[in-house]
Length: 361
Ligand code: SF4
Image 1: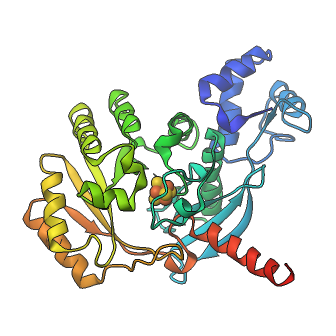
Image 2: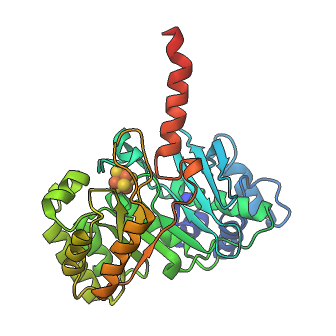
């Protein structure tokens, strides 16, 4: 069986034509799936008779196609009402996190690209749980459609921004991610603007070079966290495979090829990477790169003993960057009461289950 959410428009059109339908039928089907976010395709009065027959034959029980339909295992809203976090259960029982931030015209979805993650960043709840599997393109698309249905149910404006910063390393699953983004940016469906999509990476060098080579019009965010190779390797084990010098060379190549600004993410951890000297170091490292630094005070996790940098130290760090001509933003730690750091809600739910089970074991 194939998920219709896995298929970009040309593949869907070929599939329908192979089944004797006309190319125009693909547009009606695509709009139902990707613009409306339909969760079933039978008994739709807007489908022409041939398409309705095809849908009844091929997308029902025993059909060749299905729709990815994750179920909601948990749905939590932050106390300020601006962040909503979903734990979605996939067909094989794996759970992934999807976050909706803001309900105004500027809403942003943050989606997962893998169940678990192989990169092992020490301060990250997903890294602490290890890698389970890659998500298919359709499983990434379905998260966005779930968020859009949520917004529609609230009468809110359509989704504006998409960030791939949930569970998993997007460039470790680049084929599925790029297929999902081809689907989600198709004008005939979800129609997200490529310039409002951000791919986050911990520094998977081949993936960065691929984005450069293919001149993809998405934003790139590189999780840096340290400008010192040894210190970074302690926080981000993946940097032993793609060392800092190689990563920065790839970023320079990306900038030269695309002319695009790169966002560098810096988790501020008190006493670890938040001194003015660290700020001097990052300014020197990124010299000559069209860059913007996002400073994010640490979201605490049970598996890491570090604490978030205080506001004054964060402002001082930012002041040093500004003096060196490097623009930056201190990000709010939004949604901390809904465990909005990636992997935290899944970890919390797993702990709750373990606690429930442990007295009888
Ligand atoms: S921060 Fe991102 S790349 Fe690192 S372990 Fe967590 S999910 Fe993976």
